[in-house]
Image (tube, rainbow, N blue to C red; front, side):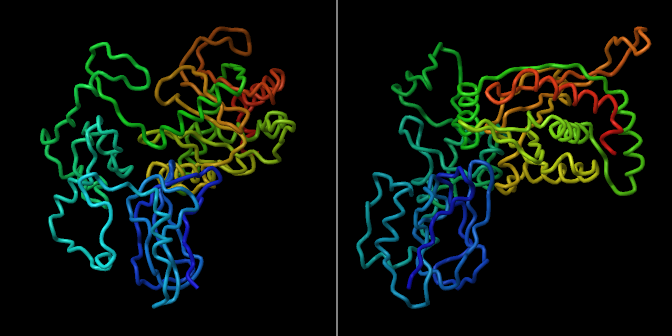
Length: 433
């Protein structure tokens, strides 16, 4: 009996995704565990495995199709030679892009089984599938990597013809372009007079850049956070000299193992320990209950092309500094390649965002619900400091600000957490005990 293969939900919040690439074709035999396709979500590209064995009888959704809803039939699996309800399977491909107006709406039934010659006028086909000018209201279909490279090179994707499925713009299309060969897509007079998102046109030269799925998600979640979560901010100055001294000694001892601790690695550990010392801050607000976590999982903000992602160091208080450093380096590298699995960036009980390496002295971070706090870390710098003996000296000091969900965490509890953090950083031997 044929089995419908449906668009999977690769994360608890996923509602739709892009079927980036098929790794099988009709007629292929597959076994449970074989990789069928690559699925792009707003955060990463993940592999989709077969759970049954059989033959791919039909593929309903072509690769390159965007916004395929979870649960949509994308292919049919069965036994070789088995009849499949092709019309039903194809009907569920309603999320696929509609044909352009100058293309036939449907082929004759007897012609469906005749494959079109792959070599016949490929450039003409690509031109039809390529994005239309903004005035036409059509989406630019491009892979995340192609968008990233185009953004870095300042290339307007509206003027690029894609060679991928359905005219999808891929990496090779961008890298093969010659400077000056891509012109901006023409805009009609009507389009030129319109405004985007209610922003008036003051006659200043501008370019409207289409938001990526990741940027849309970031915009939506941060807007919801500021609208729904009452933030309270608590700021402390922390002396770093003892931490920097300990870091130098540990790095010298760990050099033979190829481990090099960063200040951020030590701060991840410090926040994890502080959360366990002040459990009233290791919580989430859940309507009529307050969920208190028994483990401190610290989400770490990592900047990637086109947005931000937060890989998680699980059980940050229970892991050694070398392990935290190794895990963080590996997670950050895969985050920038878009290869994190959902469980590696979804969850966490609190977050840390460090902009000190960019020279930022102080900032207030936005809470990432359902978490109830995030730590914003500024740059360490030499400042005048009153020493323990009352004399004035110079110390290396950083400013950190905790953002707390005031529905879940009172100011006094937040202050306890910030105090615990400061003590751990200023007397860092507690981090290696």
